View 1 (spheres, rainbow, N blue to C red):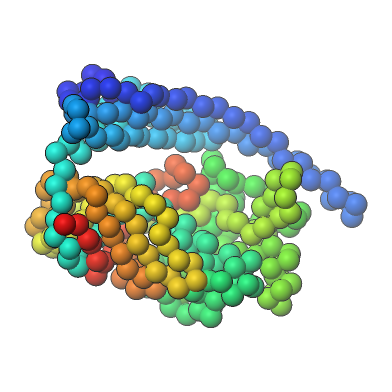
View 2: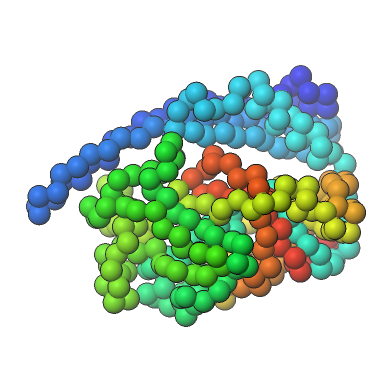
Amino acid sequence: ALAVEGVTNSEGAEAGWGRSTMAIVTSTGFSHVYEGSHHSLSASVLAGEGTHMERDYDYAGAVYGEDLPDPEELGRSAGEKAVRRLNPKKVETTQVPVVYDPRVARSIVGHLSGAINGAAVARGTTFLKDKMDQVLFPEAISIIDDPHRRRGLHSKPFDGECIATRPMRVIDKGRLTSWFLDLRSARQLGLTTNGHAARGVSAPPSPSPSNLYLAAGTLSPDQLMAGIQSGFYITELIGFGVNNVTGDYSRGASGFWITDGKIDFPVSEMTVAGNLNDMFANLSAADDLDFKYGTDAPTLRIDGMTVAGK
């Protein structure tokens, strides 16, 4: 990273490895064990001088170390990202298409995950509580939870309540088809658990996804941005301004301004706002899906977002 021209300092680099064993033994005769591993690399660097410094990072995670990128390549990527953010501008408040880089696009999938959590549905504290079997996304969008994905970071044969897991399309061609359920939330809703209980050693089980991802589209990221006269390409989100009860969405953001379908100049200290119902309905996906976090998405475009700057 430090070899990249314009990089002036490093906040550090890390390499991590971990191995876990999950064993559940119950009084009803269930006794099974599975193991998992995790390898990761990360680098965070600074570019610029004085009060005009910018920070960025890169990260990679995988079950097997052999699937990680070369550390030098990852460091170089972090440095280049930081340099590209130098001398950011602000733009006037406007309503434009917003494009989410994959590393922040996954947050959109995360918001859906929280809204279809069976515990939240049972409490009535989610804006999607009455939306089962309704169309939320365009037909081209499917979102899958696959606990059996090979080399998946959160793959598992059974959940925290000894229920066999199975792949499940929570969004199938735009339509909401299922909640994430454990035994308790399923009972409260008069349904049957679908094997999504997660647990630790100090708390009761609660619903949670495993390897959750938004399926790749057919357009490249460049094709997804084509035709955008003015827009916002987001690479970093700040804060947690999402209301799970109403779906209202407002987050700090930085990234790049799009002009005539191309990345133009860096922007910072922006706010992007909307409502998740409208955001889901106006979402389209690129073809660059990469599995590196456990909850993943390709580059996403959402039209009609409010972007506040100056």
